[in-house]
Length: 264
Image (tube, rainbow, N blue to C red; front, top):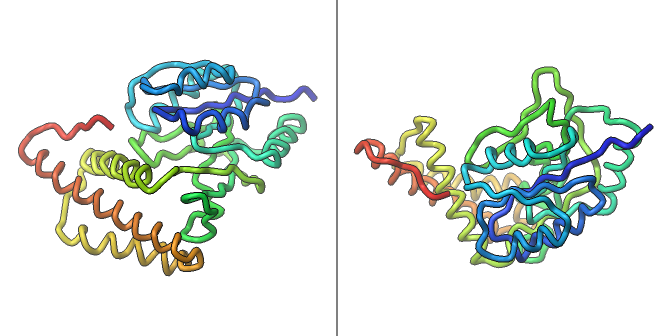
C-alpha cells in the first residue's frame, strides 16, 4: 500500500526562539505549511530554512488561522502543530505506521507532555493533556473559529481515536513570557465572551479565580508537582482574574455602544 501523504500545518507570530525545533521534528512530513501573522523577528526566515511554505495573514483568531493553513495544504491528512511543540520519534513511528497500513479513524487526539520552566508537569490537568485532535482528515474535520482555545470538530459520523505516544510542548521560556501570553489570551477570551453575549458580574473576579486554583492544585493534584504546581495553579487563577477584568472593561464599552475589538 502506498503511504498516505501528510501535510504539517503551523501558525506563527514571533516564534524565532521555538520554531526551529518544531520544524526539525517534522522534516519527515511530505509538506510543511506555515501561516505567519507578520512576524517582526526571524520566524519566517527560519521557516524557509526548514523547507516550509510560508503564507502571511493578519491575526483573526487561532481557529481561523489554523483553518487557513489547512486550506492551503496539498494533502488531505493534516498534522496541526503549534510552534512550541515537537513530535517525538515514537510518535513519528506511530504516524508512519498509520500512513502505510491505513488510517482507522478520521481524527486522532495526541497526548502532550507539557514542560513549565524546564520541568515536566505531571499533574494540574497538564498530563496527558489530550487537548484536541491534531492528526485528522481535513475532509472530515475543521477547527472552530474561536479566537482562542480552538478545537477540532469532526463532521457527523466522524470517528475519533487516541494515539499513545507524545507530542512534547515547551509553551513558556520564562515567567515573563508566561504572564504576557496569558494576558493576551485573557483579552481574546474576554472579547469572545462579549461576542457570545456574556455579561460581567462582580463575583466572577473572586469566585472564578479561587475555583481555578482549587481545581488545578487540589482536584487535579497540582500539589504533586510541588512548587511548580503551586506557581502554575496561581498563574492560571491570575489568568482567570484577568479574563474577567477584561470582561468588565469590554462589557462597559459595549453598554456604551463602543467597539470591543482588540489587536489580538
